[in-house]
Each structure stands twice: as C-alpha cells, then as structure tokens.
Image (cartoon, rainbow, N blue to C red):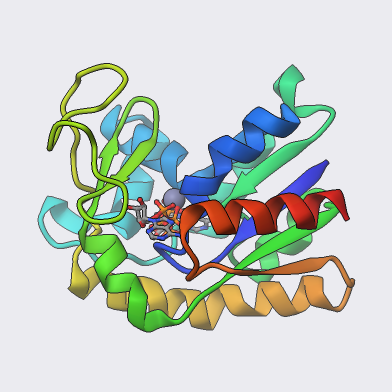
Length: 212
Ligand code: AP5
Ligand code: ZN
C-alpha cells in the first residue's frame, strides 16, 4: 500500500508508524526525522533546513522548510528498493505543492484531534533519537525515566517541543497542511481517525482503515 499519515504535531503519527510498518512491511519515510538527522550531521541540506526548523541554535520557530528541499529528500529516499512496492509517508506532503509533486497514493490517514490536547502530548514527549522510539512521561513512560527501554541509551527532548514553538507549528498545520487533507478528500481516499483516543484504540482504527 502507498500511505500518507497526516495530522498536527503530537497527533500520534510517529507512534503509529512502526506498528503499521511491522504489519504491512512497508518503507517508512518521516521527513521530520530525516531533516533532524541532516541537521545533526550538518550536511549541506541540514544547514539549510536548520534555518526553518531551529533558527540560530537557540530560538526555535517551527516553520516549514522549503517545498523543493523536502521534495528532493523524498524523491531520493523513494529510490530505495524497499520503497518500490509501498510506503508510509509520515509528515509529507505538508503543502499543496508537495502533494502535487508527490507520488500517487492509495490512502491518507487523517489523525484528527483537538488542538487543546496537543500541548501536554508535546511537552511530555521523550525520544530515542537513533531509533525514533517515542515515549511520554505520562502516557507512555519508559521503564527507567530518561532511558530507552531497548538500548539503555539516554532519551532526549526535541528542541521544537515547547509550548511556544507548538503554537507556530500548529499555525503552519492549519494554514498550509489542512488544504492537503481537502485535496485528498476530493479524491475520496481519506480515512478519519479519532486520534485523541488511547494509542491501542487508534491502532485498531488504523487497522480497520487499512483493511477496508
Ligand atoms: P515532524 O517531525 O514531522 O513533526 P510534527 O508534524 O510536528 O509531528 P510530531 O512528530 O511532533 O508529532 P507526531 O504526530 O509524530 O506525534 P507522536 O506520535 O510523536 O516535523 C518537524 C519539523 O520538520 C516541522 O516543524 C518542519 O519544520 C519540518 N518538516 C517536516 N516535514 C516537512 C515537510 N514535508 N515540509 C516542510 N517542512 C517539514 O506523539 C507525540 C507524543 O504523544 C508522544 O510522547 C507519544 O508518546 C504521545 N502519544 C501518541 N499517541 C498518543 C495517544 N493516542 N494517547 C496519548 N499519548 C499519545
Ligand atoms: Zn513525528
């Protein structure tokens, strides 16, 4: 299957992705994860992306990076053999231009959720940067605080996971990404999820949507 996961920051896209991937054996491409890795490695692309993601190192603004840059990253990543039969795109496309330039897809999972619950999810999130495993101090705590369950390595918080940056990320979502949902709705391929439910219930909804 060729799938797109769309939803505001903290709606659960990254949490559900590994489950979908394990079950359907697809390639999983998350533009946010790919951009953060490029920024950390200070590649030429990462240096450009950093401008929009975390300006001047201490002041995080949460704007989208340019369409050309992410379309380029996705095109390159899609060449992988594992991505030829199907894929899950998490966080792409995020603008109408990206949707028009992207590949044809079968299904769009819309992680619909009220803005009001997202601040708690975002500010309580901890991640294991190498694997992308995600935890939450209240909703999905690791066995030992601050430590990854699988590797024992330290967990970190994303620099854009503050209440202030969340505001601008949400603004970008409503202005630039909601039109993408309308774009696919017109094609009749959007499945609505109740993303405010507990993770296991969201997983069941995902499975139902994918078997339909
Ligand atoms: P990106 O990394 O994609 O961030 P995002 O879209 O803001 O989404 P998040 O990763 O914050 O949320 P999520 O839905 O994955 O939530 P999660 O499952 O972790 O993008 C970052 C930046 O990169 C952008 O701001 C932009 O600058 C740039 N970028 C990326 N793609 C781009 C593109 N295509 N074009 C331009 N720019 C781009 O869950 C959050 C927390 O909640 C976790 O702690 C989790 O444990 C918990 N949780 C999850 N589900 C539940 C549940 N059901 N109940 C309770 N808690 C839950
Ligand atoms: Zn994510």
